[in-house]
Image (cartoon, rainbow, N blue to C red; front, side, top):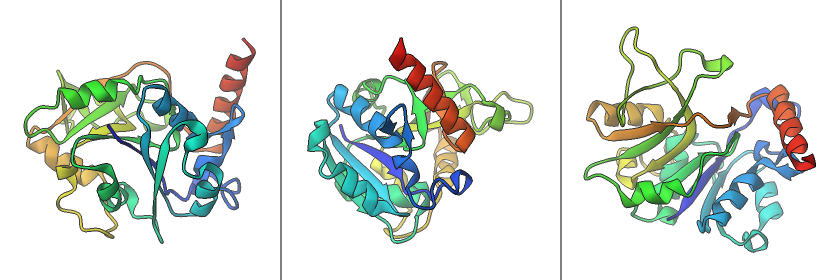
Length: 231
């Protein structure tokens, strides 16, 4: 299967670190954030990887090139201005093919087993449009995003427990049919529409996960990775 890593965000909350460096190239544990994802995908044989970029994106292309040094085949989807998640994926669909594909936010750190994405795609249900990896709610998102009932992801009802969307999902290209190439489009409205039709499945992952959204969280991740290297 193919994978896409989302790397087009401006990283406003990470400024001034992102004034001269795209957020996915910020180092943690001695490597750019993006490299951790590329290496995890390569380790399970997912070598066709698409990376979108906008802010200072040429630095990403210059750093990783065609990906051969890491054992992968990288393709890039540049955006003159960031198209948001759904818009970015829609623009890159011609690089991702017609089968379900994995998408990972470039600014998360997680030990979810990416090899599972291949199993998910192999067991894809008729009419299914998405499979989301949910995580327990972190301190910065205590209300959560979506509810999980058995294997179905739903918009939470009043008082219903919700979990946080990890930024990791497997999507069918048809999810993006309503988005035109070049549109600025968020992912959540597409997911909610698909949820209402019962076409979004998912799982709860309770292992390590972090949204690297602030300099403080980047420092925390850096300390964690450096400590693991010394053990």
